[in-house]
Image (cartoon, rainbow, N blue to C red):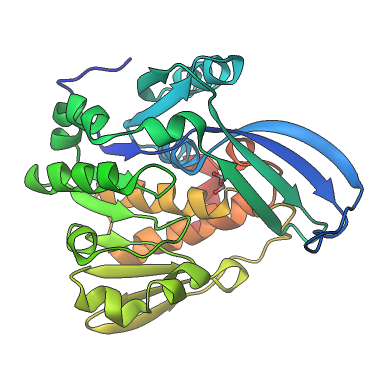
Amino acid sequence: MANGSHAYEVVVLGSSNLDLVATVERLPSPGETVLGTNYAEHAGGKGLNQAVACRRAGADTAFITCLGTDAAGETLHRLMTSEGIAAYVTDYEGPTGRALISVDEHGENSIVVVPGANAELSISVVDAHRDVIGRTGVLLCQLEVPIDAVEAALAIAKVGGARTILNPAPATQLNRSVLQLCDVIMPNQHEVALLGGATSLLDAGVSIVVITLGARGIKIVTQDGELQIPPFAVRALDTTGAGDAACGALATALAHGADITTAARRASAAGALAATKQGAVPSLPNQHDIDALVN
Ligand code: RIB
């Protein structure tokens, strides 16, 4: 149950989507139509996925998000509660976010997100949850909600003494003012390239860059050098949500006092486990599964 005076281990601020997922033999080229082999609807959205990933990894987790006043919004809200997440939901008179996802037979995907209610997560929504953000141990954000709200939340968390983590997805150019508020930034290989490379992120004030490399594991980059975390070998069925699983496991491990190497190893395991199952939220591993793989 949401409680504004409670100090959560992790607060996640971000999007909630209903994922509409088509399975295809291969992803279509521009202008091409292909036939799908399966269709499913799952809970998703990078924010919601990461909140569930934190909770399942063992963190006392709060989630700040916006939902539409439609059936999808009700379904996603119920899911947050049933997962044991403290849900701080602002309702918006309109549609909940949707993601149109195609997954091919190698588990690779392409995703179009239609933000809906996620676009309404404003600075004033952040302000309304200042107490929750200001007391957390770790704040975890992504970029499927407006960047000015993300920046405001990072600033509040920093003043409160939290560790701040930004998953810069989907990738966009980030001002120095945002980067200076990030203790850890966790891009994939495409996102880090778009952001100008790990060195430029460190030069802008980020302390640690954790790059998720899919089947090649994770790379940690700091001013002291680089460290490669080897991958856990799995058979990938659907990589949707794998990055979110990794972000949630990393945030949880840091909230529990782990060092960055241990946290990145758990993140790598969580991402690998998520890739072995279909869907975003349905694929996110729990603490026991992660423990079993890393030990
Ligand atoms: O990271 C995976 C997520 O991206 C999906 O769940 C989809 O909703 C999009 O936000």
